[in-house]
Image 1 (cartoon, one colour):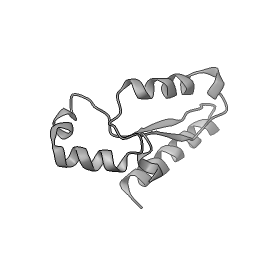
Image 2 (cartoon, helix red, strand yellow):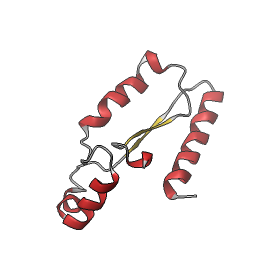
Image 3 (cartoon, rainbow, N blue to C red):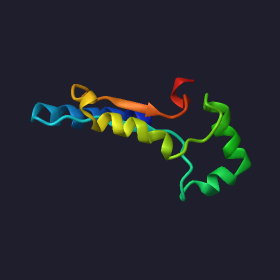
Image 4 (cartoon, rainbow, N blue to C red):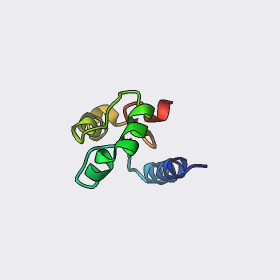
Length: 95
């Protein structure tokens, strides 16, 4: 089991237990995003190319890329979505 799979399993378990107690919740599994902490990684040509080669969108994500998913999960439209971990990773995990 990879770290990501372990995180997703743990996250789903917590979300499902919360749902059984009246709460609902899901999570966003963000891919490689350009942030203040990742600027140096983006500047590393070797690492940058590895990310781009593996990401179907062919680019690093921006924080704005996860906004729509977060708004959806926080909206009444997602009222019956519980325990889901939605990847917003430009297709990285689809490879």
